Image 1 (cartoon, rainbow, N blue to C red):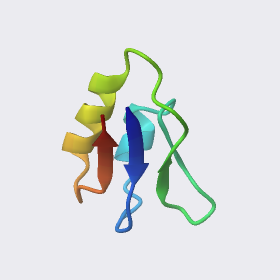
Image 2: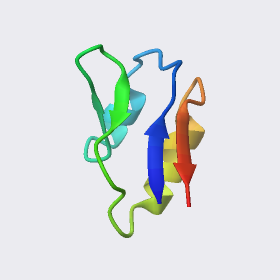
Image 3: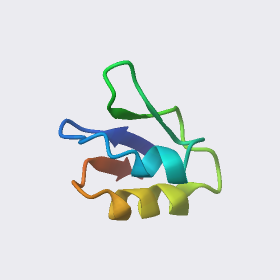
Image 4: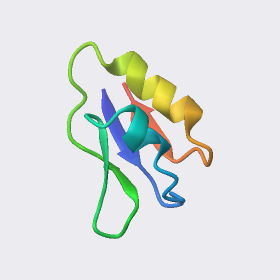
Length: 61
C-alpha cells in the first residue's frame, strides 16, 4: 500500500497526532506520509484517510 497527501492539507494535525509513525508535518507545515506503509498498518492508513477533514489522504493498494 502507498499513501500520499495531496494538495489541500489544512494543517489540522489530526493524522500526525493519531498516527505519528505514518505522517509528519513538513517544513511548510503540511502533512506528508513518512514513508512506505509498514505491513499490518493498512487499516490505520484507511482510517486516517476517512478521518481527514478535507480528504487529502489517499491510499493506493
